[in-house]
Image (cartoon, rainbow, N blue to C red; front, side):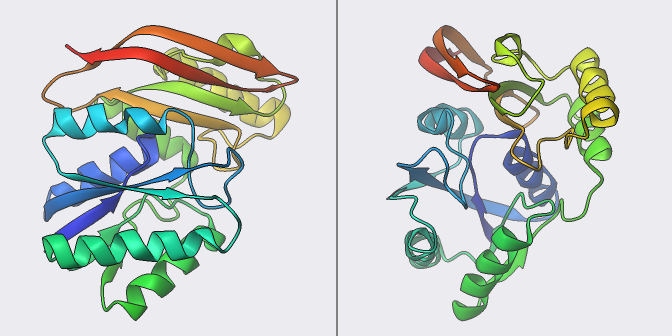
Length: 224
């Protein structure tokens, strides 16, 4: 089938894309650029750099700006999905939804209205398994945002490697966090993976952090 992928640049949407690409044709990436950092539906850190990811993977990208206001942002989501259907004749939409019923039901509803298949390849995958899948598939991702105790500023910008995965799993036990960030504890940005023709090199960035909450702002990045 010809599919469009809801793509934020984070580990979940990338992994969902990689899974879907094994049996289907990926026609385009659909990216929502929210003007609110606390969007109910969409990942926000480093969203502007998804263009480099799309370029590296050689996949067309559609970008839709959204206000990020709860429920109103759904009309923007519907708009970009409608555009993907008309421009690329997609037959379905891929999402990186893991456990959020709020997100998955709303995307499913829009797909139903537009007669599109809604494909959630990661749905209900255990978070430990998801992290292990990143490692086994050689997906390189950095932590682009944190929003929970005990994450301090040192977590921002670090790669999610085997050592970091072990630390996340330990924090699940000691602080009851969602190790893959399903509760919003961490956000991520993929810098390389099997679908990339070139990796992303971040040459300049800035951290914004206060009281266990922060994000990394990428100022300069190129494909290498």
